[in-house]
Length: 183
Image (cartoon, rainbow, N blue to C red):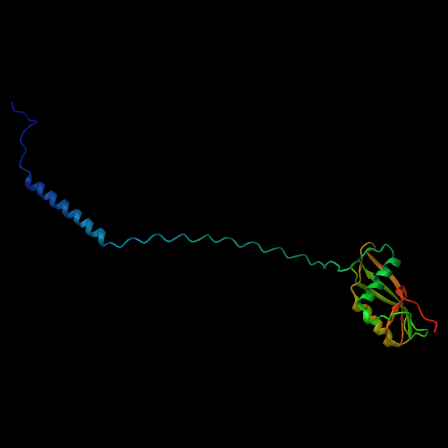
């Protein structure tokens, strides 16, 4: 009997050579193609995700600005001092220094109604000056001094003061007067 396991194999040299040639050609082709190919560009970076716009800040509530000056007066009489001092501070060059002369050009009594924020609500002459020019000048002076110190404890105030002025046009308020000379 013949041993089949060790049977001589048929001559396959030509077929084997063809396989080797084709394998080498395939490898060579792959190498050539790989060397000629342009590299694939990298994928573009992802675009940043657009953030939703931040909400606009809420519009501020229309509120009046806080008063610049505050009075802690507890009565109209106390506030009268603050009001007179405020007018003096705004009109330093128009205040008569020293005692007023014996004969005054004019005397007027004015009542001011001030709201809780220091704004003039009403100006009322209880005894107006005799000439219109003096009356107008005093009213302009008072309005130019606004806003007055805010009467925060009173919430608003009405007070009266007397205006004294001489021929130079300078004045004093009775609340802060230095008096009047007798000569």
